[in-house]
Image (cartoon, rainbow, N blue to C red):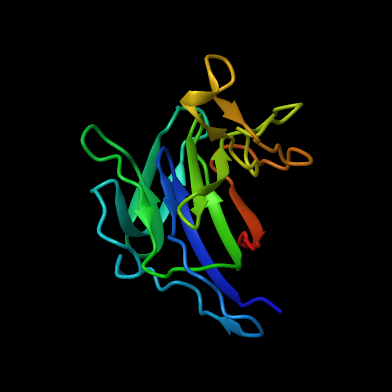
Length: 184
């Protein structure tokens, strides 16, 4: 049985990405983790000023990318600005991972969760999309290789089975069960 780590995060996002780096797993072990304590950014590698901890966040459901924040702790917020668009990486390295997170996406926002620093689960304001693609909320974002030639650079993206995206500004819950690749 592969090692499973459980991590719970609540954050509001507008434009960048979060993730963690690769590490091998020990077979036959399970390591449940407590939800990340969002009082400081100590669970994450140093990043740019677009990431901060607040007490609460709300998103305007009509104005694109508009968010309001309240002082305090418990909510991780990403609001990119010129010169502050860095990704957020955990200090925890993982292999197999069960990730539980709540997100709130402002209107027209775009973000993603990178697993092992490589595999992106897309976070996007996909409210009302009839036929979701890999680029919509919950999709596995496509890989990119310029060497494949013009028009063929993107490949292997996987859309969500259905669009379960809620309206902008509403909290959404995601459960991701990630099984790290293994090679002979």
